[in-house]
Length: 143
Image 1: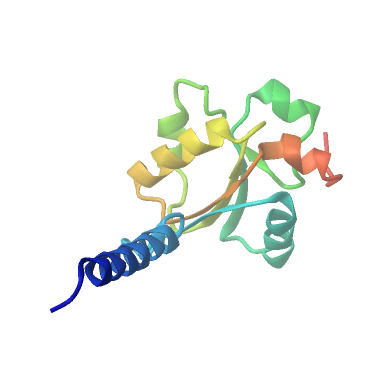
Image 2: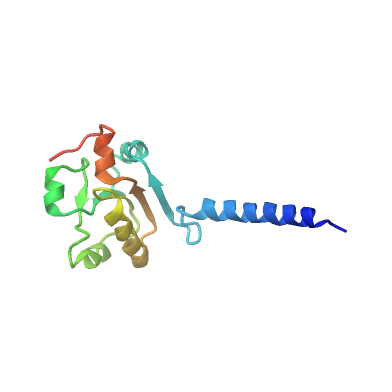
């Protein structure tokens, strides 16, 4: 008969394996076959370079028009998250494309991605720390 210590050890190992499985699935959208992930500025820049010129890739800036005018990532498309028609504007966008979503610090973009998921978008990446972190790492913006 197994001792209490052996039972606890087995329970712990199984729990740890289950936790690892859950953590691996978070952020990758595996339940629906989605591609969703957080990435830092360096990874985001590599993703942009890898997809340069591809019609099915969009850099999506969800800040206000004023913020956008002060500087944005090259090629970014503006859809203001604070606009009362944000959901409608996103509903009109191609859900088959892949999006890199960012805002100033990463808060609005998380909200934007929640709406995107509700609308059926399946491939999007989140720039952690937003354009603020992008600029702190010395990466380029245009006006």
